[in-house]
Length: 434
Image (cartoon, rainbow, N blue to C red; front, side, top):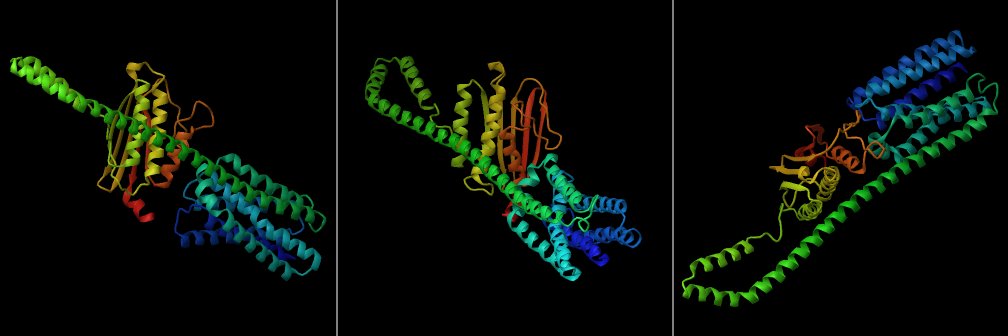
């Protein structure tokens, strides 16, 4: 029995280490992280060996040793993780839940067969199967989505599940004294694993829905820009038709003025025609068709709201950044800026947008807009907090997604009633990762 208890602790620490190395965003190399996990496993085994040797049947020493092991393993997770945030704690607690599958199964086998070797094999086999399922079903969701959007509230779920299992199986009455608890623990464990999978899939579905919303909003702005450009083109064609029709009459009039030596009137007539021809019918911001159409539509929107928008854009036809990703980012930032400046006096409504591709080495975006009042920033993300609730608006969340995807440097701040956003994207880094 004592060997069986030691095996349960070792098996739990081993598989928790595997979960750490698989699901955490590691700070160190894989080899160094594995050595840290091995040291943590040895450190967890020492108090368990002492408890089994000196106080095997005592309740409180088992509780104290369990708490010490939990603390040791959670500190290990925090030490291994690149970021010390809620996601790291969530993975630490969740790993404790996942390894309980092997412990509960092995305890059931031991109670039925009284064969410790069969129970030990069952523990390792069940933990391995659960790990494969979790690795296949939720690893990508956890590392790509939950790691960016988790909060400390999500850590309550695995923490409460672990406490429930511990109270059912070990404290104050152990499973050996009340074997019927094993059935409830097994049923609850299956429910928890299924709920984890459903929860992760729900988070993935909500994230996909959110990305679809951003893409639809960007496409709407893009289509609106194309529509406006088409209307402007049609208007220009109609104007040129009228001008061509009237040109013969104007030429005759001009010749009469010259014959009558009315040079001043002839010069004024030519000046009006030149000024008319110099009017820009189609504004070209850059060579990139998607960005140019988007900016054209957003500029018309700003014009109708009497907002002075200055755009400096040098985006090539082809680049390392996905055109739609950049368009979504720009559309959301411009939309937020237009909403902020529309509340000001028309004379104070100013927006400045700069987009520069720096010789294919980096991409720089800067947005400046006047605003009223103060802006509250989130200490965790550095993003401005939405006054509508929900921490951040959809536009700022898209900025967060973009920055994470392209490993960009992001900064936003308020300076003399001007809100400034700067994003620097290292293109060479993204070229290697894509």
